[in-house]
Image 1 (cartoon, rainbow, N blue to C red):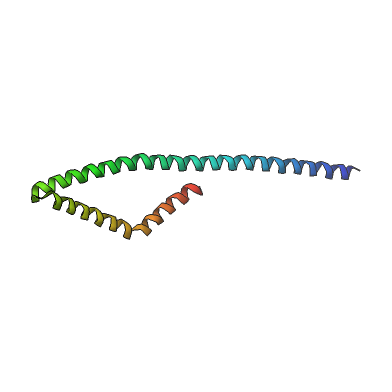
Image 2: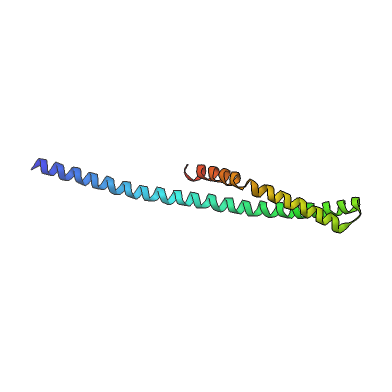
Length: 115
């Protein structure tokens, strides 16, 4: 009988250990999901704030550059056209390097996500 009681006791311990493992794993994954969500929200918030400020700075820089250029060449429409062309060239360069930008973002995000 002692053998059966020992087996019963051991199986009860294994069952309780398994239950506690599942419970702690569940808590761990909840915390990990919370961590990932907060990092993503923080990243998006910073991106929105910094991106909007950079966009405003780019607008003011473009307008002031167009005004300065119009004073130099003597034609406001031509200065605006030159500024727009410069912005289109910058956009084309960004478009050409889009795959490298994607790779860098994926590499950095995977370090955060799988760490």
